[in-house]
Image 1 (cartoon, helix red, strand yellow):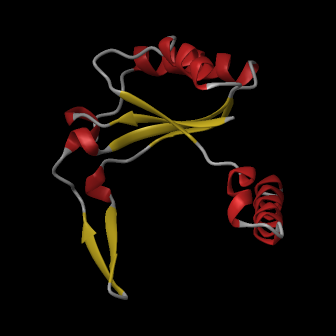
Image 2: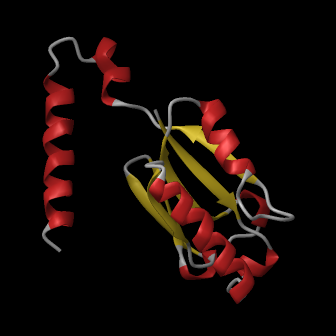
Image 3: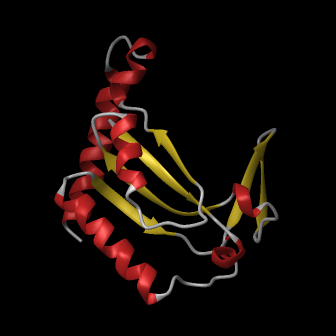
Length: 142
């Protein structure tokens, strides 16, 4: 099972304040544990919303709104993608993260097999697998 771990933004992350060396070192050690255990597939911090944009799709139109965005508690400051056996395992790993005064959300990622009822021929899943293989090959060749 794959889970997306979403680290919520706060006033500091939205102001572009980077974590101090102590926090970066602790997070680096935690990330190393995740990698060694085969749990971490990806993980990154995000720039503040002031450097981002939102695109709203409505009635065939695209409405672009540049950041920053008002509701800090609704924004994401970073993420991990983890491969674990269960939500309980993801929670146990997350409890070990070196956070303080932070809210983190865990969401399971859909797998191709989850869409089987909507794809009786398997054509859509096969197409998705080809795309994933192409992405992986491109990443390998960088």
